[in-house]
Image (tube, rainbow, N blue to C red; front, side):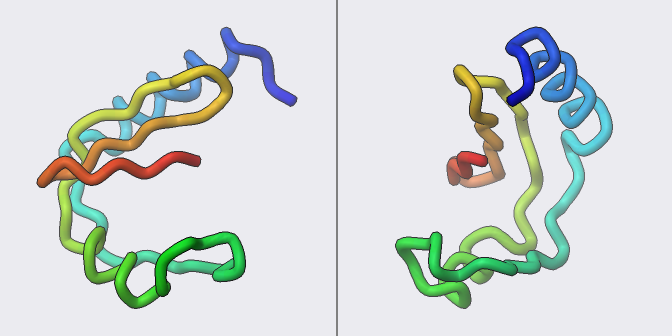
Length: 72
């Protein structure tokens, strides 16, 4: 498991590299872990701009345009 300082640095790198970019296509490889149908998730997130990346504990919070939240 990564340490918190490493996760903070990685969140900053993700933000610097991807903030302001649009999610063109989303590949979902493990549908059993979703609590929503994959096609609905794709429809909600594809075409949205990434507005921020934050570390919350040992997870990442990705904020997309129109205030959708994705936790990884």
